[in-house]
Image (cartoon, rainbow, N blue to C red):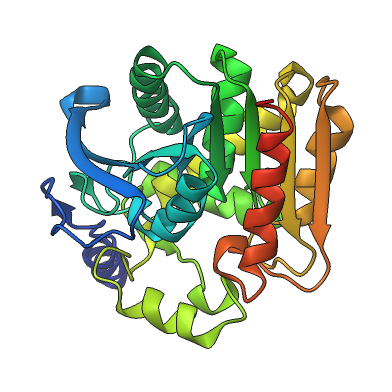
Amino acid sequence: MRSLIVFALLLSCAACGTPYLPARTAPTLDQPDGTAHTQSQFKGVGGVTLYAQSWQPTKVKKRGAVVVMHGLKDHSSRYAELAHHLNEAGYGVYAFDLPGHGMSAGNRVGVLLFDDYVMDFDIFLYQVLCTEQVPVFVFGHSMGGAIVTLHSITYHPDVRGMILSGAALEPGVSGATIGITNATNAILPDFDVFNLDLDLFSRDPAVVAAAKRDPLVYQGGATAHMASQLIAGIRRIDASMESVTVPLLILHGKLDAVTPPSGSKLLYARTQSKDKTLTLYGNMVHDLLHEPEKATVTSDIIAWMNARTR
């Protein structure tokens, strides 16, 4: 009995959860010619203060706007390069940091309900739709892809199209692992069990090194509760893929070892959208916008949106 008590105490010490950080504002950075950058904050689910930013074209006429949703252990500023290229093509870009990510408040990479992420995205997207007079697209990477897909299933937003990059549409782990994760969540929800291997994000060593030293990328593991909620969100998507009817561009690396490409193939097969494109990049891995061939990916995105904003 004593050994069991000691073991339980050791587990409880390990299961400390992730640290809480308040919302912050990023330092002002120089932007390339042709881009106007702004920062702001808004209240998300439960009154949590979330950090947001936008990049607007100043040299060309705006033809559209894109709302970007980042992934797990990610943040909006990692999409600045994409934003600059989109500005050059005439697209405004909006993005925010999820609770517990980047400059937003919250326990690092933690959430009470996956629906909270979806509702935060809805709040932000609604603000953009009320502001913009041009067609609006949504973009989601990795877990962000799951968020925008579930948002489309739940809310059917009035957007011109949805773009998914390495979307988390299948758990990518065995049923046994899912069972263990859910069991751990029921007993020790704050136990840190879920960690993404940053080495699998990109084939560019400089990108991986930058992510590992980025103070806005939480380097620890996510909790069993976070993992369980993500799995639950993916399962809800799987149950309702046919409800996706928005024009759809699905992008995935064939060698992605973080989020299975099979999830993107499944969505493409089951969605009822009459306008859908699936592009699988043969030599790329997870983070398409930070791969050596990122210019090709960006060009594909711009060409797809241009064809829908004529």
